Amino acid sequence: SLLGIDGREAITEDRFLNDNVYDRWDAKAGVELIYRRNTLQFGVDAEMDYAILGRNDQVREKKDADGHLFLHPSLFFIFSFTPRLKMELLSYYSEDYAAFSHNYTGYIMTDYRRISNLDGNFTENKIHEIDFNLKYSNPLSGLFASSEGKYWGKWSNTIYGVTFIGDLSDVRSYSIGNKSNGYSIEGKVSKYFDALSSTLDISAGGTQYWMSLMRQEEMIGTDTWSPYLHFACVSNLGNQVKTRYNVNYSYFRTKYNGISDAVSIHALQQKLSVEYQLFPGVIVHLAGEHFYNSAVTTSARHILFLDGSLLYRTKRCDLILEAKNLLNTLEYSYSRTTDAVEFESVYLLRQRAVMFKVRFNIN
Image 1: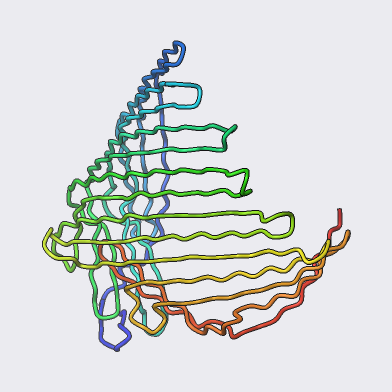
Image 2: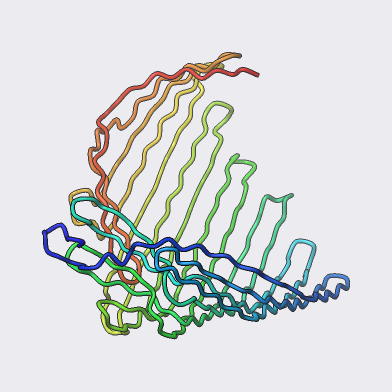
C-alpha cells in the first residue's frame, strides 16, 4: 500500500503499475489554395487525417485500438498596408486524440516520486483558434513594433482533476466532456536611440481563460487572468561601459465558480548589470537582482542578489575571478499556482563564495 508522510494509508491498491506500448498510424490527404495579388495574400488549407491509435497493456495482457477521421481546415489572410506595416489573420480548426493520462505525485513511504499512468480511454480534443497580428518594422530608424491577439475554444472528452489525500496529490483525467475558451493580447515596441547608443524594449499583455476541472471529486469552474509587463534597456556609455537593466512584473488571479478569489499573486523581478573595461583586456562586471513574490509566506518575500567578476583576456585564455552571492543571501522562495494546485518552493543557497576560473581558446 501507499502511505502518506503522516503514516496514514492513502491508497490500498498499487494501480500505477503499467507497461503500455502505443503505436499510431496516420494516412493524410489535403489540398492548399493560395491567392496572391500585389500586397494581398489569401489561402485555404484543408487536410484530412485518418489515425489509428493502438495500445498493448503488457501488465494486464490487454490490446485495443481505435480509428478516427480528423479534419484540419485553416485559412489565412495577409495584407501589407505599406512595405513596413503588415497585417496577418489566421484561423484554424484541429482535431486529435492521444492516450488517457493519470499522474500521481506525492510520498510513497518515505520517498518523493512522480508516477505516470496512461491507462484508460483515449483522449479526444477539438480546438478552434483565431490569431491576429499587426507588425511594423523600420530598420533605418531602429523602430520595431507588433501587436497580437488570440482567441481559442477547446472541447475535450476528458477533464483534468486533482485529489488531495493528506500530503499526497493524485492528478488524473476523468472521462467527462467539457469546454474551455480564452483569449490573449500582447504588444511589443523596440526602439534604438543612436544618440544614446541605447535600445529600449517594452512589452505588455495578458491571458484570460475559463475552464472546468475536478477538485476533490467536485466539478468547479475556474476564471483565470494573468497580465504581465516587461521593460528592458541596454546602453553603451562610450567604448568602456555597458549597462543592462530589465524588469518583469506579472500578476496571477484565479476565481473558483466565479465567486471568490482563490489565489492572487504579484511577482516582480528586476536585474541591473554593469560592465566596465578598466584597460584593454581587463573587464569588471557587477550584477544585482531583486525578486518579489506576494504569496511567499517566509521572510524571503523580498530577495536581493549581488555578483561580481574580474576578467583578464589574452589571445589564448581568459583568467576570471568570480565572487558569488556577495550579500550572503541564504534563502530563495518562490510561489506559483495552477488552476487546482498552489506551490511554494524554498531553496537554501550556498554562502558567499569566490571562484577562480581559466578558460582556454584552442582555435
